[in-house]
Every structure is written in C-alpha cells, then in structure tokens.
Picture (cartoon, one colour):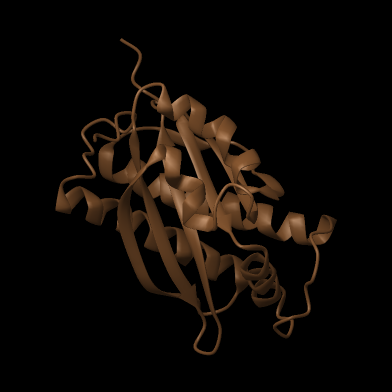
Length: 195
C-alpha cells in the first residue's frame, strides 16, 4: 500500500516505515516540550492492518476508547487519529498535569483540553517532520476529542478509507518518563490523490 496522499512514501518500504517512525518520535519530542518533562520514546512498532479490523486493535467495536482526531490538509488530505484506552488516556493526563497516577477518572473539560493539546502538538510535530522530509505543505486541523465505543468513533473515518484501500498502517508508540509509561496507537489515514 502506498500512503498516497504523502506523495512518494510507501510504507511497505523499510526506509519509509523508518520515516513514519521518525515522525512519531518527533511528535513525542513535541509532547516532551509541551509537558516540560523529559518524555522519551521507548518503542515504536508499525503494522499493516485491514481497515475493517482496526477496532479489533482496541478490544473490538464495542470497547470504550478515547480518540483525538485531526484532519490533514495542505498538499495532501487525510486523517490522523490518536487512540487510547480510557485508563491510558487518564494516565497520560496525569503525566502531563504532574498528578499522581490514578488521579484522573473521567473526561471533563480540563482533561479534554489536555488531550486535545496532545493531539495538536503531536500532530503538528509529526506533520512538520513529514513536510520537512518530503517538501510538502501538511497542516493539522484543530483536534477533536471523543470518548465512545471503538466502532462508533472509528467507523465514519474508516468508511472513507475503505472506498480505496483495504489496509492501512497503525503505529503503536510507548513513551514516558523514567518512572511512568503510556502506550497509544497513532493512525495516519490518507485520502487518495485526486487526478
């Protein structure tokens, strides 16, 4: 599969998978700067998944997830989606706000704002890295934060992808400080190039 909207990037190629992995690492650098803490990437894995099975990565279509969604525009169009299990998103909020683990137990306005800023910073750093590397202009929209069942949250976005591709790539990133780690899934879903 070619990540068609970022011209010339074929994720099936190891060097381009490394480009995407480096983009995710750049996004975590942005998160570290935002948090004012030393947050490091512990590991990034990229896997090819059938689009129709993406919700299975999170426990199935009825599993509760928290999603930070951004639209990509500029020379290319598409979608970026950060996906967390609720307890992981709450741990991330605690990490960012310097609170003890387990403090955050719900998604109120402050938690939504913190997660939205995570999406804004990570999306911007990721797209800036790809733009600098490929010479394209790539911009993220303001983030939208949603908590719902995986099928309900992901189906609308994935329906667009299924129109032209059966598979996409999911980047799973583990990052954190020396004593606290968070794992999240980063999906980049391009739209096809208009001829």
